[in-house]
Amino acid sequence: MIDLHRQSGLPLLWDPETKQIVFEDEAAGHSAPLPNIRRRQEMSELLYDGQAAEIDELYYMYRGVALSGDVEAIRQKGLRYDITAIVPGTIGGEYVKTAGHYHPERAETGLTYPEVYEVLHGRAHYLLQRPQPEPPGELESVILIAAKPGDKVLIPPHFGHITINPGDDYLIMSNWVSRDFSSLYEPIREAGGGAYFELSTDEGPEFIANPGYGELPPLQRCPVTPVPELNLITGFPLYRLFQENRESFNFLLYPENFAAVFEKYLQQLLDG
Image (cartoon, rainbow, N blue to C red; front, side):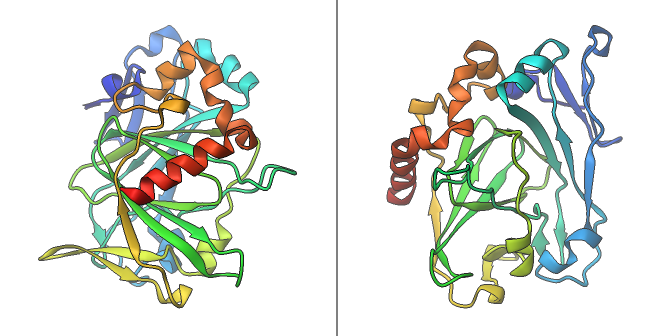
C-alpha cells in the first residue's frame, strides 16, 4: 500500500495490486468513486508509436473524491477534487502520459478556466502549451515543469496540458477544477498528441517534436513556482486548504478577477 495521507490531507491509500484508491476508514462513510480507466487503444493516435503495445491500462481517474462531510460543500462551491494515478513504464520508448486537454473560455471574460495540480506520490512532468491567436494550430510557447510530492502546479488560462510519468513508480496526483465545464480533448487529438514526445533513452529522457504542429517553439524547462497570492505553496495539502479557506479557490471559478496574478505567475515561470 502507498500511503497518500501526508501529501493529500486525506486518509487515502493506493493499492498497487488492485489499482484502487481506498479510504483507511471506510466505516466512517468515506468511499472513493470507481475510476475511469484510460487504455492504450484510446491513446494510440496520441502516442509517438501508435502501434506499440507494451501496456494496456495507462491511468486511473477518480473524479469527485471527498470526505463524506465535505461532499455538499464542494458541490455548492462549484468545484471538483480528482485523483489520477498513472502507471510507470514506456510504450514504444515513450513514457506513459495522459491524453491531454484544453479548457473552454469562461463566458464573456476572454479567459479560459485554470486548474491546479498537486503531486501526491512519484514524479511528474507537466507539459503546458499555449496556442497563438493566429494562425490556427500554431503554438506560442511550450513549457515543461518537473514536480515532486508536495509540489503544486498551476495551469494558467489559455494553456493546454499533458502529464507525463517519467519515473519508475506510480505517479499519483490530485487536482481541483471548476465542475461547470467539460475539457476539450480534440485540439490535442487532432495534432496527434502534445507538442513534444518524451522518450526514454540510454542517455536519459529525450524530447522529440511532434510533426503534427509544424514549426514549434523550443521547449522551455521551468521550475515549480509557488503562487502565494493563491495560497499555492509546496507542502500544504490542497484538500486541507479547501477545508480551512474555500474562498482560496475562487481563482478556479472567476479567473477574470485574478488576471494579474496569472500574468505574474507565467512571467515568473518563463524567467526561471
